[in-house]
Image (cartoon, rainbow over all chains, first blue to last red; front, side):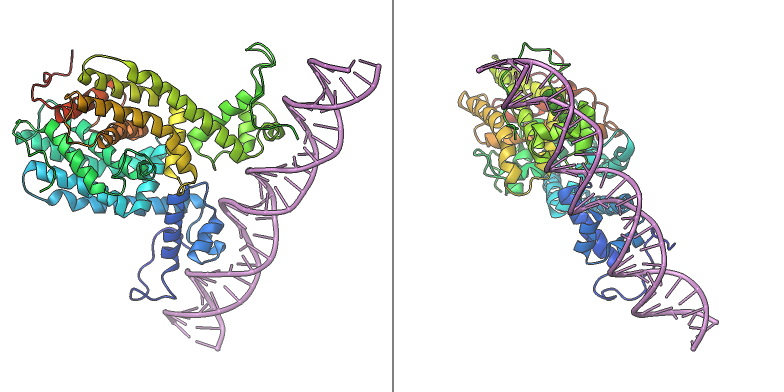
Length: 226
Length: 226
DNA sequence: CAGTGTACTGACCGATTGGTCAGTCTGCAA
DNA sequence: TTGCAGACTGACCAATCGGTCAGTACACTG
């Protein structure tokens, strides 16, 4: 039996093989299918067909459907956390940094839509602690980073000290995640005209949050436009 | 072929038959299974077993798996909207009404967890307009009601006029929905200690929102306790 | 050259899937 | 009593599921 888990050492340069590496094609196809249809709705036949390989070859590289799913999920997690790394590095006044963070967070969710949906699916049918402890491995990093950022704001006096930073972080992430996952439905609501303008949404969210969070009643001007 | 869609007229009182009506047992079992495992992960065999009837009998009452799922979804929708009806009827100052609304909204989500998860699942794999137009039938009613309530607040001067009520409504619903669907994950985060105290969360959310929404800088006192 | 290891495939497997059907049981109207 | 209607069932069906296997193509090492 060949080793069917760890990725191999690069046998050649970068683009060649026949087209692209079969394992990568399988992972990409599986990621897309799992993201848009869910684990049980995707058959290994469909994955093989989408990756343009035989089904037996899929089982040659991944011992089972679960293994393939976990591999996809792992790349999704690392990819998600990697995207969040660049976010906290900006400088400037607290309000501006927060506004930037919220905007970037939602942008990241939408940029790699497949991975985000995959993780949301995982959250939705988390059975007890099984996949849950694995799912929080994603959330934990960027969530902690956000909480730390907010706590910083509290120490510097820019942020009210009487609110739990974790709650604010939950509110922020929740606002973005909900917008992301529901934009398809929001688009059909008569009162909503911002379903396709995420930055308009995040700017207002940031504005509402800030006027509630910020300590001094000085605040920024009413108009959100610069 | 018997009619397999509309519910029949009541043949007897209310509790009898043999135990409970077979159709009800099927619907309940299907609702629970679909909610916790998703459409594709639930087999008709499992539904039949959970409802304690033969699989053929399930197909006798519901022509296909899709039909059964749609029937479950329909009851979920009507049940969800019915729960929201009582919510807007309260009186008092705007801030208190809003706080009450947010609290009740999350409480409703958690009360019938199965139905909520079902609808969230439907939102997640909405393929274009198919189930989407059906899903917004749920959202539309209470969302419009919330937007109208906020607009009222704007007219009465209690609410800032320069923010889109639909955005505020999205923020509110999003905060609650995210808390609901992620509480299992939140529970495992070190910074979070409110995963099982929804009212503590909603009160802070309301407080943050109000100090951002409310027009005058008078506001309420810092401490959220009455 | 032979030999080995691995990517890869078509054909196949038992199990399970959604769905059908012939027929039984029960209650009710004529 | 007869007969019809609908709730209900066990047995069955073709299709598909996840997964296996024997065998081929090919690249590398000796």
